[in-house]
Length: 468
Image (cartoon, rainbow, N blue to C red; front, side, top):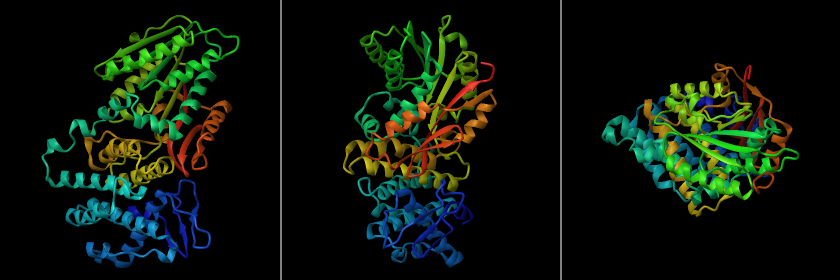
């Protein structure tokens, strides 16, 4: 009960939702009424549902049982349309189920989830889709904690481990390419992040670009295009180095595609792959460097995947420091999904993924197969791991920029200002999308946040080592 109080609006009264200061993501309130109706976002539906559940619990005290929770709750008095009323009711059942799971009342939670199963869908409203994925994850958690399935079957390797997701992301499949084309987040980050690299290597003739965790090479293509357009600077070579601990064959295929692209632009291109069985084995000597090379390090969505293995992450940062980069560009998921408390982690991830599913609703048709694949095979796997796993098996551990600042400071990294050019690129790219008004760009100190309707989704930050 106390956790719900900290995560949901204080009250719903007279057609106005008053947000608690802690959970509002810099939005003081959300207003809606019958006279001036504005549809609630998916995340706002979750917040309304949580507030209603909180009020219901406070009114009924310890006498709340499943039968009472499953009684329809009309939202007419707060001015919601019929479909929104249904969505809020479904979300309320899901949050009630999570609360029961948190209290280890598994039989009651299962009954609530059965009702959620009946009302949710992988092809319905974004709320129905979110509830489906989180309902599946809650059932997995119940099965795990009650011993209903053998321990070796909790998280089969092909289902839950990050290797599965990362291997799929190495190939330019239709689902990921559709997201890149239709959703603004990756393009905004790529163009703003590469501009930050250009700002620091503007006059370099020998560029050594170290990308930790290369996928299909989109960022490198943007960088090479930018380098050849510089006035008065001839590029003697462009060296790309990447580090892999698996999928080396796919990385080499990416290198071949980039080499062909570089050749079409008359860029002297060198591609190096450092193959390791474990990131702890990385050493400065493995990087091929030449005199007068300017080194830039690029870390797109990779450092966060190493949080479960802090020794590997720390080793990597120490080696990067020895390479004397002029800049390290980092973008990560801006989430708070690493709490040791289950219900806290559940609610934070529910808000985050609700915002993302809301974006998919605005940018892609409901029956779009690429969208369905993304929601089930990517987001669904992340939700399953965040909600159902514990200990070493919980590998999805997104943290926010404040946590990264604290971590980087231990290694002498100093956050630097993003240039006007980077911010301009971010805004310029965003305006190319029909959903530009919903994709919100903001600053958290020196960090650019890219979000959806006020909810931060990703962060872009730039760093330099002291005395480098």
